[in-house]
Length: 160
Image (cartoon, rainbow, N blue to C red; front, side):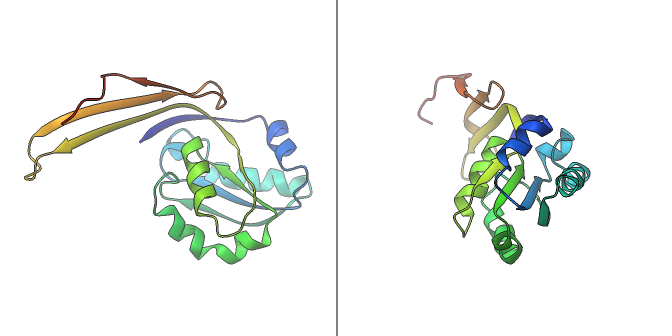
């Protein structure tokens, strides 16, 4: 999956975190890192901003790919630090936010720090030998400021 993200204004992020004293930050090591919106340096920058505003950051991590099902294992490893927090700030695309929310052990809010501008995914099904593609469908989901997603199929879905 490839996404294009942009950082939300700090004021908007702080508005989400208004009632949270303790925050855990999660960044993404794939698309958000490539967009310079949610990699290690951006997460550490956000940590500094939050601490400067009086928030306690209970921990942070960069998951290899936030939208991947393996995210649940990273969340398990950091469960104690996440449990200490009032909320999680996800510096990931919208799919990463959803994946994190889905796999959280505790019921706590997961707030987005990024706007998802574009999501693209190329899916290919191959023969048993894995040599020639039988069906290739591409899906592009474009989001308007991370608020109202609309899906467009570049080719009508068809049976393979």
